[in-house]
Length: 360
Image (cartoon, rainbow, N blue to C red; front, side, top):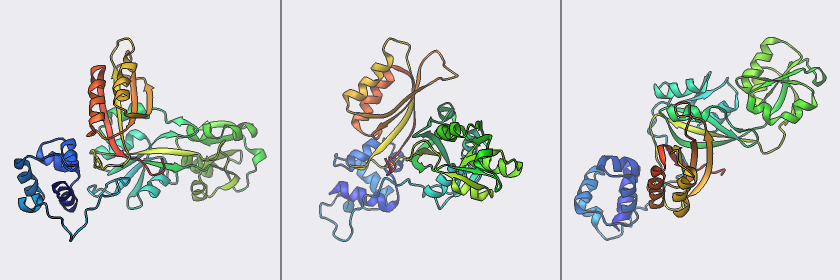
């Protein structure tokens, strides 16, 4: 069948549906429908054959190809083959949880630490780094502050997600004791995840830029009354002593990270794959605007998995939202939902379309 030959030739060439669509001057949805059996105009078949270095006759023959098997790639994987810069940026000091996330998700990349999220974004924008690993929310502490304000103006795209298990330990100097701890330092998310331990020790929580940085500070400060909440790797890296293990309020603590790239890498719309599309929008100043925005997704059976409001500095008079849905932009249902969304909004920006992490 033509649709099977097209899929086989495209994958052998190493093209995504989006890449082929760009070369042909059509939308990715058109290519997706061709590969599902929609009739392809003869003129387009000649163009496709030329781009994929195959003959028109081979592409259009009805005889089955028994010499090779059409293979649908695992779309749960993030396609990073075209990213030549193998440095991945993260915020924090070495051995922070963001560093662990980089190593676990992209072992082929070299993690590089930056002082702030803005610095991470700037590194990717300038091609100093190929990717950035950015925490967006935690199962106990909620969303990471300020991320929603930085994302829309970063100029980067979300190409994937990663769920990193978080297992906090309480670290102090080698000669410190629990009874002598007066201050506990860590990232504000870690502090919020360990409130019960902090209260039980009657210690003062002190916000630090990141978990590993707190360990480094205590190691240099040489003050026995200070402790840090951090991973086992962070405490061991900076030569500290474990005062207590697993101090988070609830087990099963997980931080969700998003993977940012300078260019959009949209996965193919393969049947059965779980795809997430992330976007922001600002509603018009009319009664029931948000309700009307949601209507198009409801009537087209498109599932929302995240909807959060935030205050836009540029437009604080109108409500802005960060949203994630299950679906690919080339899906007809998603296209219709966005058409209706545009009618009730002043701004809509897609931040990325990416495969759902296998841990969802």
